[in-house]
Image 1 (cartoon, one colour):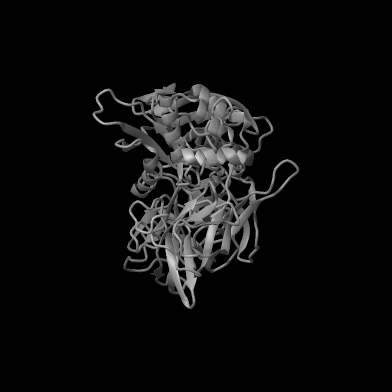
Image 2: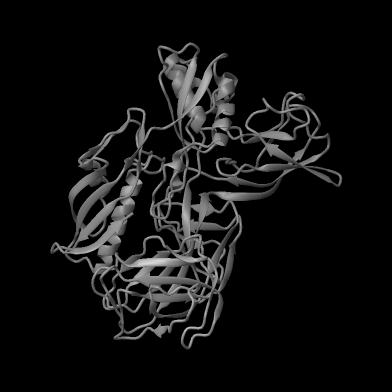
Length: 581
């Protein structure tokens, strides 16, 4: 069979592989965080329904890539009611009022004062792009931003000052999810305000904030998660004949990695909702279960009437909504998703702050030959890994460990790394990289039937090592202050993308290789293509034992990106910007 492999037609290979229980790895869709900029002075909730789509612009060399939301989201937008100076000890819950001093040129916010911003509503989990009338000199990284939560002030996420001389600096302030509405008592000429949200900016300890001419401006942004591809609504599959083992083709290539479809069985005026399962092994005769065969792109019902119910004869079968799409082309760079496919007046702009990750192409028919020509031991490990990653169950990487000499029963030990979506800075938490119990159960149902009888299957989390890099970069002679800020941010994003275990990122866009350690040469490689950069200096890693030139990874482990610190110098060697995150 191996000798004549190349003589088989494609359909023959597929048929033969299915009989052997082999399934080629399927393509997986990329995921991305999309930032939506609200219209100025908009004071309302903005619903982002399931199926909202965003796209990249097409070009002569690259096709348009579409990303779609798979769940409903509700974003907030607010207008700025007022802003002024108050003592730092003031709070809405404090007894006794304080006079709000309007912002004006020549005033100074003392070290025991703050700038209070009164918003028309709280902005939980949104980002406020705020321009403050501060003197555009010095560094603003040490400013403290806080939001009012019920009875106390809580820190916001890191606010980044963008010094744009001679304009006022702009700050991107992530508002915590605990931001709550409150009532502000009358302060000076400001009447009582109900249901408002409060933010405040405090000087760094021991410093002051001199005010310049200008006014406060507010731009609100929110984020949603979108997945490469589109949602296919209300597809009719056909009518059941009541027999066991029926299957029905789908009109579009289905993906179940991030959305598991339901199926409706309609007979007369009655509609039954059927549930997708990964195996009929635990189903009973009364369970309304079906399976999706992504490789054949078909819906299948149980071949055994005792393990899974059967749709009644002449009933109409339809899928209300399912997801279609995927491929490595979806791993688009940051800032390339700029089109809201159906424009709305509430949203003025969209973009992706970080690159999309996780998109993989389906394997070609030559994949079958890998099994036919491989040795038994290699084929077993390779088959288990490819079954895990190719089943459309949200597994990014699988790694099969060698058998142990002391195993009393045949045991397959498998490391699983789930797909995950980085945050707005490109980071992944340790918890995101742990497979859930549901994911492990689904993979078990997919792999179990293909293992020899009596084989024990054990799942293990990857040994993960956090990488925290510190580096100084030097900008080119013509780089402006704004370009230095952008360069520092781009360097931080490049480090997060490089030290990433997920497909679509990593040194060769296939995720960080299993067992590979990192050294300072990787920092140079990660930052090699940045615009406006002249040189990379003093690369190092921060470890529990201090600064180091390398990070050692377990031979079966992976690394993931932690917090990086990038210091950007102008061409004269003066510090121009810092990125930490």
